[in-house]
Image 1 (tube, rainbow, N blue to C red):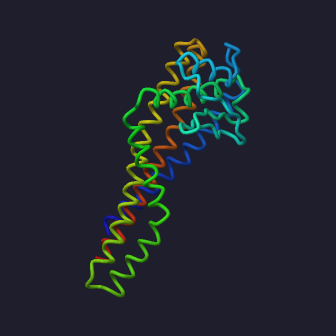
Image 2: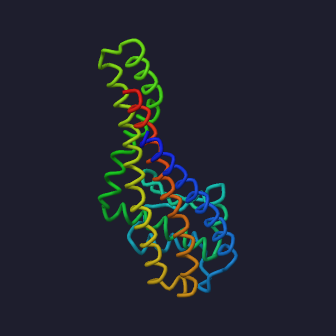
Image 3: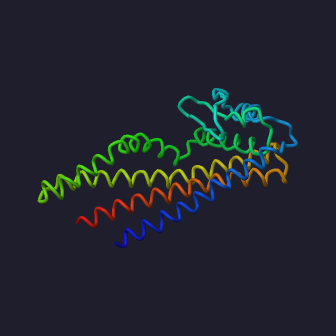
Length: 235
């Protein structure tokens, strides 16, 4: 019963923070996407300059559809900038671009957490496709057909392990994203891309985006607690 209450509290907290983060991101983006930086540089040009200056000439810049759909793909070696960012010289666009460049730097530097995450992601993706079927089968085997057998328990424990792995990935992702944002702010300041006043806006949007990962972690924890509660109740 304690696990149920704990899961509910964490879930509500995740919902509150997630809602606040989404509103904050949207508000900050709408505000600072209208403020053009004094440097006059646009996001795609900034990305190219930063990459070349860091000897990352093999990484390409691509335009992708959507709003705030920016990402860095280490396999294809591409920094993808959304339509509203690619040709924009706004504070928001430059901050987002610098963040994705920060991820590219993490791979160049051999960031330990990034390496660990890359190892765990394919495993987690595979397990996530099987987690619910395994959980259902495990419960049926353990509590309906083979109540004296450990077969069902094995299925359940594997399913719980999948949720635990997902939670671990969320936990690892949080500092990775925060580090990319710190790198972004530092490079924007060092290169003079944004003034001290403009940096306030970039920090605001990056901080708001970071909250979405906090909400994601709490949501993952809530799911894990919920599964543990279900398992505990049936034991």
